[in-house]
Image 1 (cartoon, rainbow, N blue to C red):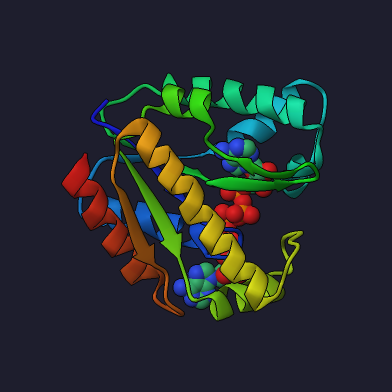
Image 2: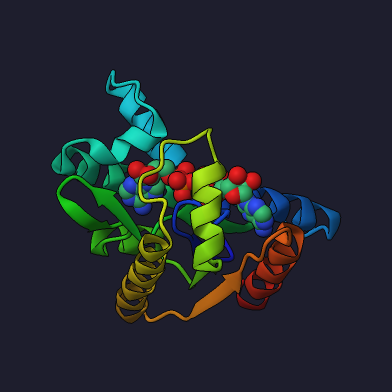
Amino acid sequence: MPGTIIVAGIPGVGKTTVLQELENVAREKNVPLKIINFGNVMNDLFKKRGTTIHRDHMRKQDIDLQSRIQQQAARIISRTPGKSALVVDTHMFIKTTDGIWPGTPRKVLEALDPSMIILIEADPEEVARRRASDSTRYREGGGIEEAKADLAWSRYMASANAVLAGVPIQIVQNRDGQQRQTAIDLLDVIQKRS
Ligand code: AP5
């Protein structure tokens, strides 16, 4: 496999929207790319254990259970077959009931073995607005100050990951109404590295 790239962004930053655009842009430019959502893999694993749970409620589960499922998900993702670059859509941290918890702790990072970490960011005011207007999800923390703090936490965690894995970090801005341009920027960054 040419390489695994971790793409992370705080809830409400527009990660899913941008990654959907990325699939379109990559197809148009004939760039082979596979995108896997870490939360989907975890959600399937919860279901297999007999716990059907909304994706926004996984973070409320017992942290030891989340940790076991998180590591299992990383192992499954690491066995993804194929020759294209692999984009892992995930989070640098999760707000659990026990506190702020790393999305890619050491064992997960080792399993994923990324060649790069990309953070999708947006203006905190825009993040707060997107969180407030997205009625399809259960999101906590709608304020601008909370969005600012979350963006900072994402960078702190990315720094720790980059040091452990010895890989670079890139930041891509998802400006209002510019999701396609964000996807184009993201593909440029990915192509340079994979
Ligand atoms: P996940 O599904 O990754 O959750 P999420 O971040 O809450 O949500 P999304 O990625 O779906 O999207 P988003 O909020 O960035 O943006 P959206 O495109 O919807 O993860 C789910 C759960 O899985 C986690 O909570 C956690 O429990 C678990 N998990 C995942 N990884 C894990 C890990 N490594 N370890 C442990 N647990 C893990 O956009 C939001 C809104 O903004 C939309 O209304 C959209 O239309 C709008 N919008 C987007 N872009 C723009 C733009 N450019 N201009 C205007 N509006 C925009």
